Image (cartoon, rainbow, N blue to C red; front, side):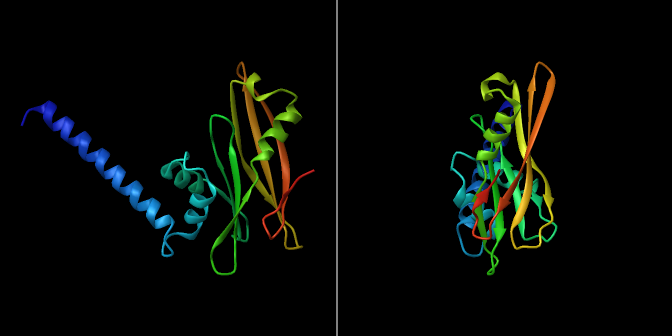
Length: 166
């Protein structure tokens, strides 16, 4: 078989396999036997965020010391989507949207999103609490002409998923 035909065939097979795996992951996320964390993320997030991006962000997520919650960020062109997933009694996860924190951090820096060349927002660390609430610090770094500017915000999350900040 000619080399160019083998290359085309190999590319077709790899695209087909990726498509099948993505479809399988999507169906597993929405089935009761799938991964509860991935399922909660897939249900909470826009379908514009790919299955592989969801999986990548969850793997990079920051788990609380007690492993009762994980904070994860999902970069998007229009702004980072930030969620905290809280483990519930039955092993399921409650999704708490904390995406507003990026705008609050940018406001602390004093410039609009359009001013910066690059912006990254991600969970930085968990703070210990003894009252049943969760507290996570979310950091936004913004670059302009090679200089980095950083602001962070500690978020309080109630057990019902309500996200509070200063």
